[in-house]
Length: 142
Picture 1: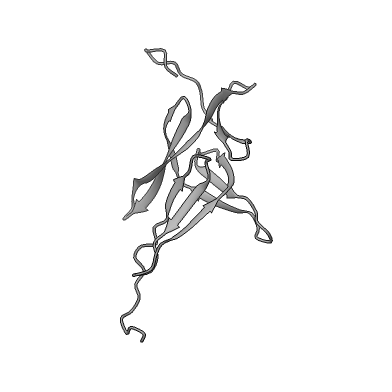
Picture 2: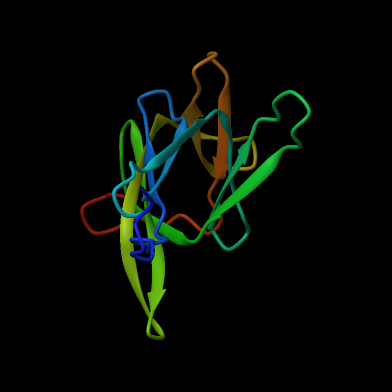
């Protein structure tokens, strides 16, 4: 017997995550009483000139390649990872909604630009080239 109670959607917020092989997982909440839906995808990581992150999902079968724009900024880095803080705007205020950490390695290219090479499941690497200038601090850190 069908319920007369109207169905409501919990929240349309998508929760992103990255696994150890830098594949993107997107989880959306299900309707009331239903499980959430999760999609895991292989793809290519790139940076826009404004340092926003784009994840291009690899095309499958007849489906065209899709791009997911992740608005935010570079939040932290260490020797083998780069953390991205994703923004969300609520009531005209931006706040950090969540963070994604990509694993890989750092390298300087022939034009002396700093690059983060994102490690992929198939052994390939995506190159994220950071824009800007080098600056050395008082403790000799870049």
